Image (tube, rainbow, N blue to C red; front, side, top):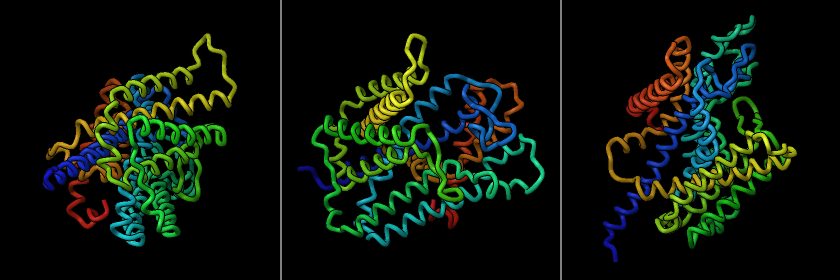
Length: 388
């Protein structure tokens, strides 16, 4: 039998691995936004800055960044929802439903209001400066009233809060079911097939019912990707179910042992998605519905394989004590909140520079990551540190 200290050490290592994986995803988020100005498909609308594909679009492009963006897009936000769901039921059991709701509103709702009300307008201001600046209300008035009030990356916060509140409501209405949330996959095959089924169904239903990747807006900055509502909700619930029991059993090393194979299958599914999107010569054009379904299912498969591979990689290789990793983990949430204005202003500053696009990307990425990290460290020493 293991000594209690050994069990505790293993538990801490497991939690560290999950935290380190979350930090790695946040780094991908920063890289994703830093790349958007330099991908071949980036487009700027000179008459309406909100219709541009990104706040800043540079005339210099680099095609490998397109691969980074499209690969990221398949899995990284779904993985964040999964990781966010892992500790929901333990938090409800520990704090009670009322305490959990208060903590979620403070931890997600208040930062969302800050990001949507201040940080996102700051991030989009360089885009406004590049346009014709029509007469009428000033930028800040237009942004909130006339121009759509985009929340930027903070859409993740309000949607995660909505999922959390709905789950808390379900637990309040059926408290006896709280103990039945736990899902302990008996094998790697069960884990994989269940996740593939959940992801495929969610993506397929929305591909049929919604079609194109559109965004909806409830009111003000409360907007999100319509076509992925079910997908993100499904991965959040998978995380909730896995975290409701013993994570050491749910995400045991033997359940995640095929992670290298899953990474390869994720790559193959991603390449299949690229082929379908390109529709190369020699392949007859597919009708809209079969094409949408094919894209949705291959993207769901690629995302599922990559997410499970990332979990396996993290369980096998992350979690070792490290001052740098601990600092990044401690400040990753603040980095997520703060990085977007830094990205767009660095990109804006580099617009007229003759530097090649890869170097501009590296400067935008490294400057935003390090700048937001330093800001996060400073803010942790203020009352704001209680929230972020």
